[in-house]
Length: 102
Image 1 (cartoon, rainbow, N blue to C red):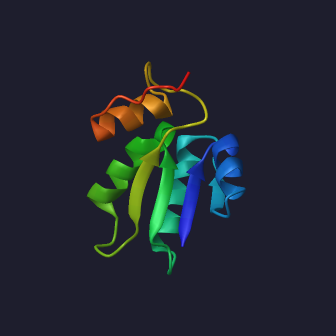
Image 2: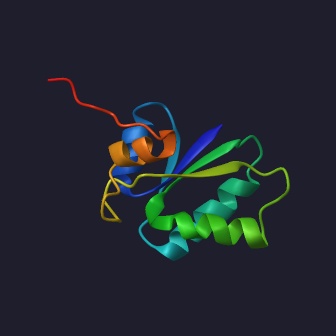
């Protein structure tokens, strides 16, 4: 099972693709949602918006069970870093330049 944790727009958008999600508005809500999802049986992957990505590091250092779900930060629906668009992140991760057709 995959769970999305983050802002309403991101959770709603990925929910349209069939992913279960938890909408959070602040660090405290996100921490509780992340802790709960990481302990839930059957959860293999947690997609956490980059707004709350620091919480994933905190959880991994303190509480994450050895066989807990993989936590992957995903771009937020709201840009949180300069140059942080999804396109630029994909280019940086893959080490390639994506050119637009036109």
